[in-house]
Structure formats: C-alpha cells, structure tokens
Image (cartoon, one colour):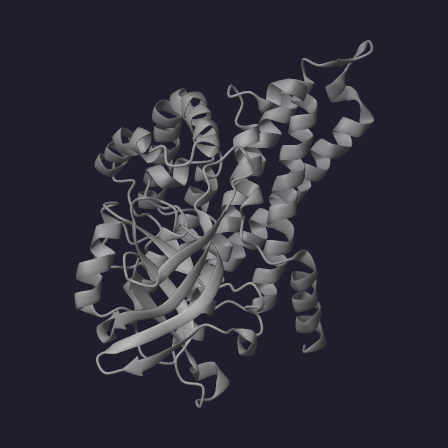
Length: 398
C-alpha cells in the first residue's frame, strides 16, 4: 500500500487545508450559531449562508472530490486519495456541505454515476453535482434489519409503464431539506426471484402523490435535522426511474454502505483530531489545584488513548480505502465492521473529554464541540453489537 500522495493530490490537500483555514474557520462560530437557531426554528434556510463559500470552493477546484474516475468531475480521485480530504472536512461540522461532499448526496451521486442510465444522469445527477438540488436515501425500515434483507417490507409492483410503490421507511436522510427533489428508495420488486435479486432502487421525485412525511426526527438541539420517517402509499413511479437494472438493489445497498461507511469513519477521525487539539490546548491553561491539568495522570491517559486510537484507526481507514481501489469497490464486511466499531466511539469519546475539559465554554458558539457532538449523534453507523458479531463471524469463517 502506498503512503505518499502524488504531487497533484498533495497540491489539492494543501489547497483544501488553506481554504478551510482562511474561508471556513473565520465564519465557523456564526454558522454554528445559525445552525443552533435553525434547530429550534425548522425551515430556516441555513444553506443560503453557505452559498458564497460553495462558490469559492467551486472556483478553487475543491468540488465533488469524492467522485472517483468519472467523466462528470474534473478531479477523479481514488478512494485512497480522497481519504485525507474527507478527514480534514470532519474538523468543521458543516464543511463537507461547502465542498458538495456531504451525505446523503455523496453516496447517492456515486450510485447514480455507477448505475444510472445516461438520460437519468442528465436529469437527476447533473443538478446534484452542481448543488442545484439535494437528494434523500430511503433504505431502513422501523421493523426490519438491513443486514437481513428478507425482513424488508417496502415493495413495488409493475403496472403498465409505472412502478407502484408501497412501504414505510425510517431514518430517511435528506428528506427535510427544502432543496431535495428526489429519493432513492430500496424496495422489493420481484418476490419470486432469489433473495439477492428481489430488490431494486427506484428514484422517486419528492412531489409525487402518495409520498407522505410521517414525523421528523430531531437533530439533538444543535443541528438542523434532515431526518424523517416517510410513508409511500400507492406511489406511481415512471418505469424509466429505476436505477440500474431490476434486482441490483442489494448490490447498490452494499456498495453504498461500503463507501459511506468509509467516508463517515474518516469524517469521525477529523472531528476527533479537532477535539484532541482543543483538549490539549485547554489542559495547558487549566489548573487542578496547583498543577496544570495537562500534567495530571488521568488527563495524560485520555490524551494517550485518543492519540493511539486516532493513529491506529487512521491506518485501518487508509487500508480500507486502498482495498476499495484495488478490488473495484469491494471491501470485506469484516474490514468495514472493524473500522466502524472504532471510528465513531473514538470520535464521541474524544469530543466528550474535550467538552469536559472546557466545561461551560464547550456549549458556546465560540467552540465547535457542541456542533461536532450533534453531528456525531446523527451518524448512521450500525449498533456496536452488530459490528462485533460481524467481526467475530469473519474470524469463525477464516
């Protein structure tokens, strides 16, 4: 596995870091305050505050960096090349949105680029790449487990030139954004086929009759939520709005889980690095009795655990990115489970201890800790018990 970036990627990394320091960080406090206000007053157009920064990012060539080897982007970075960039974006809760690399759109755009027909790409992918629209991802269900596809209930049947979709999806990411125009919905389209070919993905325009929001899922008080439950009641979808071919739904689900899982883990590392920097800085000025807190054994232990965890998890993440490139987008489930079991808990604990060290100041808009904590709570990682079971199963099958 290579460790040094190419000159082109090194230049992009330098440009990204400089952009974040000079353009994003000076406005971080004001944007965090706006996000907090929007969490209490749904419907506020916070995204408009990011528009000028998005334009600058596009002009700087820091746009759609996540999309590998595509004719529709100028960069064409590999997963391994993109890894340090999404990690850097994790240092600011909303930074990925500025570079048009936020979820669920990044995962959806990669699916559309890989599987959709050219007319579908022209109509639905290109506006996403230009950040003119947003999209949502609907796979999870309240009474089902995505690791057990036979438990999924949403289904669609063919009626002439349309698919008729019925189902109930939860944790639908992106649906509450007023710019969202489409949902990618995983559903059963052929109950008679072998299980791994029973499912497909339909692109459902949000304004289609029968698409109904059931309830909003809140953003923990510090972030504007885009999550909701959605009912699909006799929703008629044009036949040409199936993404890819019938029966490819589980392939797309697994491909998306691999890519989004890796990106989310790398984002967590960026958030943890920022929190650790702030923790060390604070402990060098905070006193416990007559002693600086940074010299206290308990805080030294926490710093050491965070640094060890960060460097170890980063090596695993970079290896996973390299494997995705070498294996044409494939990654052993055990590898992804190991990464997910480490990255999110590490970021949450590091942000927590940094919050403890900063005391009440951590909840103000002058520090990013509250915004990072709120974003981490909305991460769509599987339960830790399920990840551990997957890792153990991989060992048993060796």
